[in-house]
Length: 346
Image (spheres, rainbow, N blue to C red):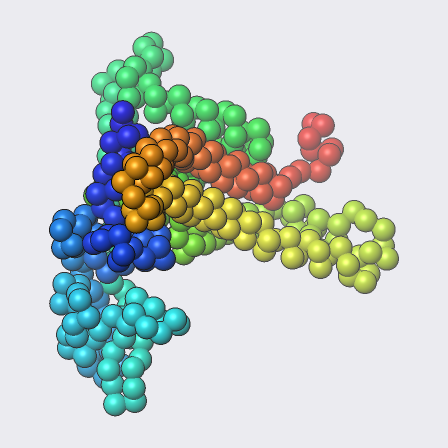
């Protein structure tokens, strides 16, 4: 029932004025791409959105701060406008200057930025709610229940089943980062499949976000890797001729960068693909509108049922992607903290 309600709300949000006006590209990319406002719903062809702050710096006139509502419907404000035509700057703020249209420095609070702030606040509140129980009880004598028990179960699962086995004896050093990464991705994934405000922002389906998360793992691996990690990169235990060419060191150096790249692309691609699949299924309702009431009704029922199934599947994907990112990050960090065989034997 909950999933069916979410699908129904998603149908209400679809920016469709009439069957003939349905634009598949606008429908799909309008939901998953970033924007300068937060679209809530469309009623009788009227878009209801929350305007967000625009913060730009012009090379000639300095900083400008104003509401994105001033740029809605193709309007121009203080020389700034949203360019919808050029592919290189599509749906980005541009500025009219004497030298032509240029791209200003743009640090606006977009939909994804606002969603990131809200989701991070939700994560902090959830953690504080879980911690409140431990301030009032002695965990050595009493087991937590309810939400605190669920939170403890997830924390212990991630630490005991992922972090500790993959990293080894140094696991406590990296547990705070890896636990934060797991819950950050999990919360953003869950809120990303909620199709109504304040959910629905495509945070982990944005490659800029996954790039920064992969960079954190990259820094944790390469800044705190021990001497044995770097020895295996620049002087691995292979025949001398492979090191002298140097073939193996080159492969190892390339691997240093391909590991975080795989983290970035895997999370981004899986979450974005999941959103696109759900939207693609729901779009059948509008694509078949011109085929007649009988055909449209039959296919709409199938689309909604399949959409409910996809939404439930996305719940599993939300957890799996957080689990996989944390596991791979733990593996990469564990490889950078390896110890010689004689130290392990001791």
